[in-house]
Length: 168
Image (cartoon, rainbow, N blue to C red; front, side, top):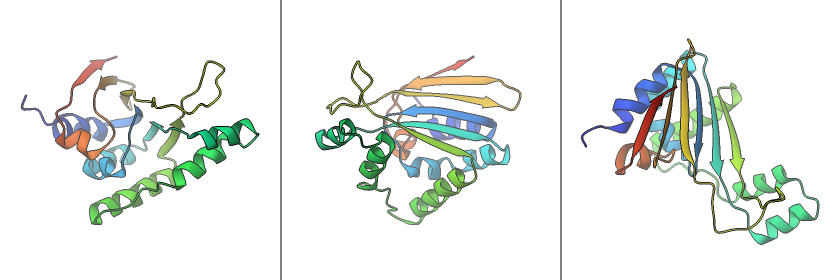
């Protein structure tokens, strides 16, 4: 009841990390800003973060794919219609950190798109909403977590969330 997910779990775990794999329905750069002390450790450890985030496509986008447009290009166009915007200096710094991490090979981002049984994208009200992660240190020791926390500042620092952590 009194634990602070950000300060008691997330930041200390990231400080020791050599690898951080995360699947989440929602992502905001502000989560990196709030966890900057931990991200500094990940980068200092020459660590790598892999992030899978959810996105949905509309009927016109799915039709374009069916007619031969590349999935990656369609998703890229879709995401460019809702770019990450800084709402203050902390978020601007977070976006700069995000870009730097991608450019330096510390962060790889993939997008999960809802697909039908034939593995073809489909428009749907349903979203990719997994919320799991695995953090490994340089020795290969790993912890996994699962719960209700999205990769957002609100999720890690303000919401009433559930989180289950396991040593693997």
